[in-house]
Length: 485
Ligand code: AMP
Ligand code: MG
Image (cartoon, rainbow, N blue to C red):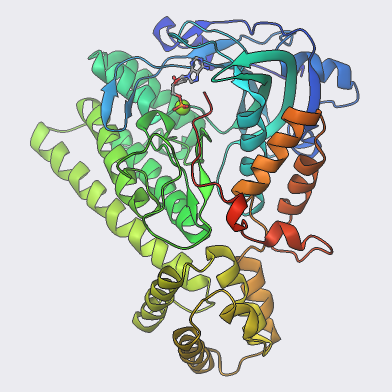
């Protein structure tokens, strides 16, 4: 990693603390993402050297390792200082497309922001984040990426002793809404401007020279989040802890903790063990997006151009636009799943499909995937997703009728369309749990490797991989997930 730099470490001292990763005794490589390493022009010929870097035992020459400062609203309550408590930004690397990427180790020891924590991560959350973030990428959902997973050879102590791990993640930018809140809470307008300018240059450079650039920054972030959340909704993804410190200004899915994919469709689904009131349930995600953006608006208002009334008016408009935009995008994403244009009729069809899926506890992923079989004349796969077949049969007829009207005829092209939009393989919770258990108990990672391989091609039917497409059996169901701490 000779091509590393760290422009964030050049920002004023309040932005970060210089921190070296704490070495670990017996690092072992679980997985390296060769494809991503190649995109970042990282030389992978010397695996021992990579193990040194990705375990944190060696910091690359010229790297300035730091922990980033940030604040955040956690479940609605403001915490003025959080920061990277178990993550260390090693530096930034250009990818082959000319974009700069942050390279961060997660679980690499105590930082100035660790508070009571040990700065470490158990291997479970490392495996989870590696698998889910790469699956998200394969489904074209904006996300941080996983570059490497390491086991440390040391235990971490949670309720029991668990194997320790370090994840190397890659992001367009690890700045969060919480980073803005950090300076806003301190009334530090000068550093707020520095942060906003840094963010613009890094992520939205074409607005740098424009008038009212901070409003434009807000709109750009809102747009990215609108795209992101609508895509989450379209694949049944529940982030689980959409605190403002986990809400990225690059519009990537960030901080995989208790996140999970919904199986039986229910808009009220919550997995996170700490989300007792369902604040971050599936159906609330667009509203929480708005809530988080309101926090960002409060940070940017004091540095925006114009008098107070004017500024408040324009930002209110931007927030209203976000609400409309995210709902419009969700409708478009959902109607795409039944290969129809977004119209009043297709929206109605989606609504009625979701309603019967909810009543029958139909698996979100398999129901949509099975529509391609119905196009080929086999309705059984679709009907099997439901306990009661009358309404689904009726629905299929209405859908086919509308398809005929819109497309002229129903042919095999639609099968390809449907299969390129509706994944067959998602990283299901019980499979991830199996992968974690395998490593924790046997030190092997066969299931992890296989899960990574299958979900790397989420739209492609793969031979002998039926198990990976199926929902959890009754005794395998995972109903609760936990933060990665
Ligand atoms: P999260 O919501 O999981 O992203 O984490 C919330 C905050 O807790 C962040 O500031 C983390 O850096 C911090 N944190 C989480 N786990 C640990 C840990 N094991 N040691 C120190 N800090 C942690
Ligand atoms: Mg976080």
